[in-house]
Image 1 (cartoon, rainbow, N blue to C red):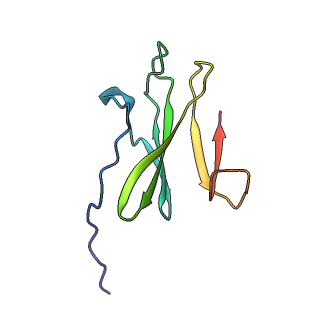
Image 2 (image 1 turned 30 degrees about the vertical axis):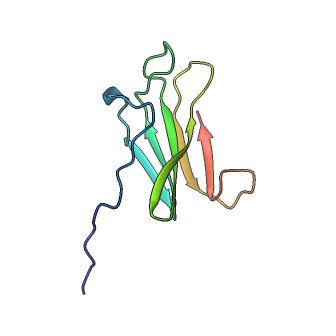
Length: 97
């Protein structure tokens, strides 16, 4: 059996990221869409509130499409799973806890 080698195609970074954000702690990928968790992200004065970033690949280029975070300032946990729900992000169902 021959397995093609993996290679780095792109490096995703949050537009407002910091080292303490722990960007990449959780990652979900489906086709050309990636959701990347950053549980240590600070929002305003709320340290470690957390955020998730949505990236989409088009024409070989990945770009950030959204930053998902809870506006109340409470700590947030995101999980994503494949979905066929028309109400969710395309192919994703996002849960905020």
